[in-house]
Length: 419
Image (cartoon, rainbow, N blue to C red; front, side, top):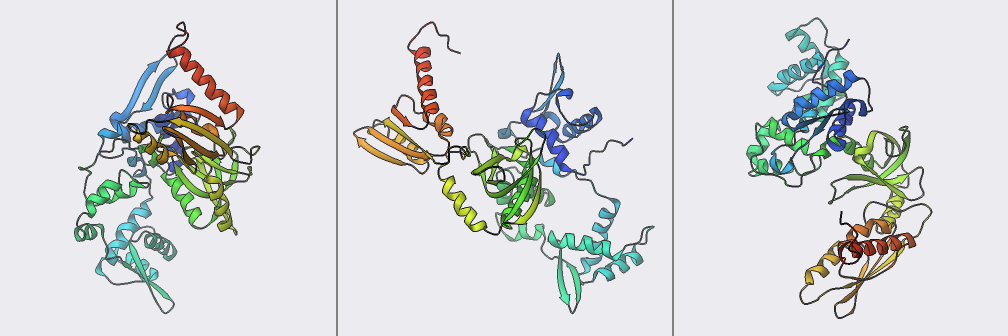
């Protein structure tokens, strides 16, 4: 029977549990559809260790519900970063890390064979230092910028990089403040946070009111997607939003979309099962695998951009409605006192046009793949909308019914209770 360890080998399983606790929350043990009760208990203990006082419990008739509650405006560091620092390592990993950096600290370049021989001579142990194992670790650190390579003849030599975080932070004034800011605001903020910890610094400058800290659970998936986009590759994605059985789908990723309203992030591109582009939530993706290169990537980007300009949000509509639908909204705006309303319409409308019909009357025309997406935005102008036309019969009917219900609630039938 395996013993509990706070260190983890694969982040994917931990991400699933943290998502259940943080995003969906308030579930009892039997409602978390994962593996055994022991696995649930282990993952809960890890979450408690990383997140401390942010874990909440509530005893109900069905059992104890576990959730994570964080007020991002009152924390200086995303607590979910701690999960990434819990990756396990082998004895050999840690041994090679310190021995290689120690030997190369004298500034002399050496080959993999020379390093393996030196370690066996200076630091003898029961297990020998095989040349191929040493070379694999050296190449791993070359990718991370810890070591540099130089070729002499047919031999490859390795040396310790002279560029260090402490040296960079000291050389460029204000760099530490910039890293501190971006450690909590940008994608891959964990990178900036790691730099701060490595340099012994802390964020004592910035608090972010609207900081979607849960994004860090998606960053490993996001890195793989962006790598595929950079190399123009298809990817195979397993997402529980596609099929309840978790079947895979083939996707050509084109763009990453982020909602400023909900904070959700999406991958948008061409999927194998649809004629139109599709968008998938990053927090629904369980697994991703790179596939072959797309030979006509440039043409697919042009096709995507042509369709994306008709999106109000992230929906590209349905295959059965291939053409964008025209929506026309007539606004009545007090031009003398409500100029800010016109500015807001111009700022937030998409690829449409705003035409002045006369004094205090304006017509907004949009061509959208999915008119449903703009309805929440449109309803924020109720009281200034004179006419709503176009769209689809279903959208128009729903808009009219909503207006009628508002009238009944606030100015019509007094017997209707306001909920």
